[in-house]
Figure 1 (cartoon, rainbow, N blue to C red):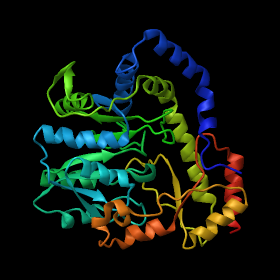
Figure 2 (cartoon, rainbow, N blue to C red; figure 1 turned 60 degrees about the horizontal axis):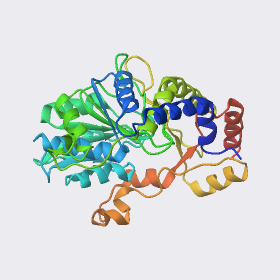
Figure 3 (cartoon, one colour; figure 1 turned 180 degrees about the vertical axis):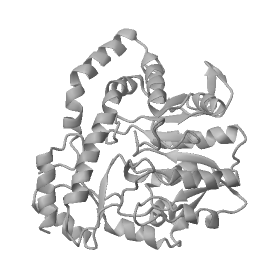
Length: 370
């Protein structure tokens, strides 16, 4: 069986370095918000081309704390509306709700799976104050168009980059163009994953970075003095140490992902399979780091069973759209036909830094015989 994702194999090359980092953390005797977290925040901010990085407990908290930070700064108020893709993982919407804001769902483009900028304004109201962009599956959304809308209408832009570590908008910076606040997840399966939960916020907004640093630590900047109603959401010192080990290899891992995706895009030739559309920017480079390679087919279960019978494991990202989830029952009456079609048809193929080209060739051959 070719596994969909072999996390043990992905982390094996780092085992010795991980053990050395563990010894360092143990020797330091400092386990919360220590030198490893500070070092990773510096390293990741430099990598992303931003001034500030704040390590937090996970990707969901990263989003929630951005929203709560803007509320503390008076740039948002509870009850404000936030535009968000209807086609996303539910965490994007949960973050808006947990900050006491109102999600307004907008359809994606069928070709890219990302939010359709042309639909943002027609779904906005006087209460709309922000756009939450999701770079789904690793492909950047159309940020130039989105920023134009945001600037013209004084909307904040927040980016959910949980699946897009290292995606390039231009040669100078990674992820958008530094006009946004960006949330990352370091869940183990991500392009940059730790060995547990972890997340971060990157931004050029000094005030926002400072308030999130406080909010993540009980609303405290000085121990036992609490300025805000905060939470406990701090990037773990040991996970930060592991991320410091893996970060230098992220670009090389992403290039391997792109090479696999390029073979899939060129060599899969089956009229029953719809391949993803990859956008190319003005510099003729892809804005996709292929956290996932997601195809579509009208008879998904049949294809998934066929692949399993041939020793290929696949996963569905995602089977149920957020507006149809029981947890969001108050949205169940809404209709998003493009989002529904995507959720009914998508299937994710194996793709990772440790997938070999022989395995890729086998997967392609099996798909072409379907």
